[in-house]
Length: 208
Ligand code: C5P
Image: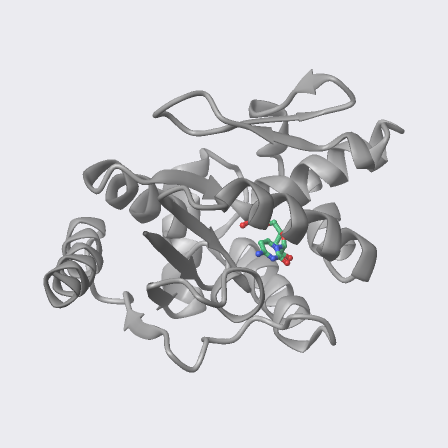
């Protein structure tokens, strides 16, 4: 089974996606990490074509670039900014999409990102689009990040990234026509996990 979760920055795709993936034994892929790894590669002058996603059995696949495994080094704001700029380039998007499509193959996956349901796994059985107000997403980010930045500064950053993601020519951020949209502004993470899980379970029941 293929499940996609798309939506803007800070909406909770990763935390929700990881829990739902575990519950349904799906391999969890964060497509943003591939853009971040390419940003890291560009900054460190690595060969971008060497980006690879490798299965480690039942847990999350491992990402490497230039022969280096990357994970923690991708979480900085600088890398996030650079990734969002790089994500406008056609060659970069094609590279990421190809890796995800190849990896997904006939595996059971849950892939989160911005354009997974619209451009990458267009035949996915379940497509979810999460949204929340920019103010609420800034609040969640601040809680998660241990940062000195004010809420207003974080919200401004989120809006800037939303704008870049929504207005770019290639694969702009928008729900797929067949996506189920969940506004999470006033929902807890647990409630979102339950809703998404309910949608997947309903789908499984219908398919039986
Ligand atoms: O989700 P994350 O913040 O890690 O993604 C980093 C950047 O990569 C995003 O700001 C977005 O511009 C880009 N991205 C994208 N398409 C995706 C996933 C991420 O353009 N499917």
